[in-house]
Image 1 (tube, rainbow, N blue to C red):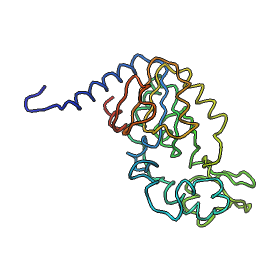
Image 2 (cartoon, rainbow, N blue to C red):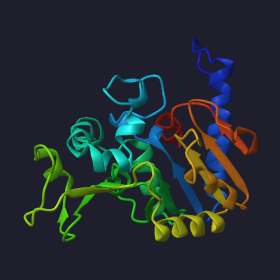
Image 3 (cartoon, rainbow, N blue to C red):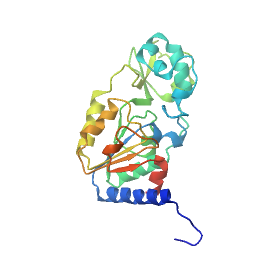
Length: 251
């Protein structure tokens, strides 16, 4: 240790955990990363359940209600008012976690990213094999003719966005009361079941069926990185309670 530099017990423990994570990564040939909202908070995208997340901000209706299929159908204009303001963060850029995962894929270490996020930041960072469980804000389709529209079109539209054919344009995101895409779910299950290292980061593991994907893992090491405790902490071979961006910077 350098003279005059004090290392706390927690800092030493965190450094040791990062060292173990590095060892896991280097000895693994098929890593899968399963991430949630906490992965993108450093990019300026608010999460849903922390004290400063969307669920603790005041709206006329609770966010759970607004982001439901029923609300989209019955209160479409109010849905899009919330959606444009809170869900379309198009100026956000990938952070260190996104970039490191893309680097691991480039090295042949990372087999896939499974994400609950809808922001597309993993692809922006360079990741190619991404299973988006809850869809993406970057894909929007006319409900009448199926025409494609990008997120910028939705952001810059007013009221209820409509296609040139007159149909309502719907974001390709999974709303409450809607089921996950079967092909995406199958791909995620396949990737997780074949992984020798599963890294879970930035998710409370409270939303099902996504959270249940951990049950398909039977590989060597399970790593869990999150600021707060989760229901699955006891299953982890390595538990790191902290900011996922800082952990990946340590790699």
